[in-house]
Amino acid sequence: MKVVILAGGFDTRISEESHLKPKPMIEIGERPILWHIMKIYSHYGFNEFVICLGYKGYLIKEYFANYYLHASDITFDFGRDNNITIHNNVSEPWKVTLIDTGLYTPTAGRIKAVAPYLNGETFMLTYGNGVADVDLNRLLAFHKQHGKHATMTAVQPGGRYGVLEIEADKKIRAFREKAKEDGGWINGGFMVLEPQVLDYIPDYGLAFEKEPLENLAQDGQLIAYKHTGFWQCMDTQRDKNLLEHLWANNQAPWKIW
Image (cartoon, rainbow, N blue to C red; front, side, top):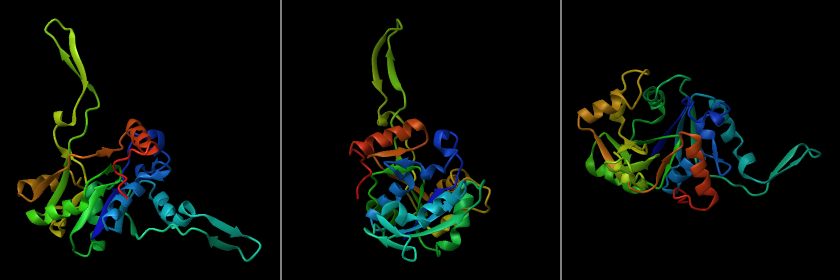
C-alpha cells in the first residue's frame, strides 16, 4: 500500500528555518522530520512513498538522491579513477516517488496530481510535519472494518496555555496546564483513503480540509480513528524544540523502530 505525504506547502510560522528549506526537511536529531515520518510507516511494513513536492522541493530530491552520503561512511579515492567505497551500507527498504505538485497548489490539488501513481488502490495519507505513535496496522484494520471511503486519525492536542481557575474576588485559586481531554478532537493526519476519495476532488484548486473532507462527512463516508497516545505536529519553533528535546533525551514516543 502506498503512502502519500504532503510536503509542498509554504509555512511562515516556523520561518526561522523554513525560509531556507521546506518544513519536512527541518531536522529533529539531525534527521529531517520527513525521515522520522517515513520510519514510522516503514516499521509497520509500508515502504512505498509518494511525496508531494512544492516549495523548495528540489532539496527533498537532493536529499534522497544523496541518501548514501547522508547515512553511510564513505571513502572517496581520487587517485584511483575516483572510486567510491561505501563501508556501512545504511539503506532503507523504501521506494520513493517524488512528484512536483506545484508551488501554490492546495492540499487536495496535490493529492489529485499524484493520483496516476496510486494505481486506483487504497492508500494512506499524512502531512509532512507531524509524528505520532499511531499503530498503523490497527488503523488499517479499523478502516477496513468500517468500510468508509476515508478514515482520519483524530487527536486531542495538549493546550498551549495554562488554565486559570479564578475566584469571584479575582483571586487565582489554581493554575494548571490544559489537559488533552479539555480540548476537542482535531485532524491528526495519518489517514487511510479509498480511491473513491479522488472523486471528491473535482479540480486542483481545493484544500483537502475544506470541500472534499466536508463533503465526505456529509455523505457519511468519513470516520474517525481516535488516537489517545502521542501526537505532535511541528508548526512553530516551540514545537521543534519540544520534539528535539524528546529525541535528545531518548524519550521520543514516535521512535517505534
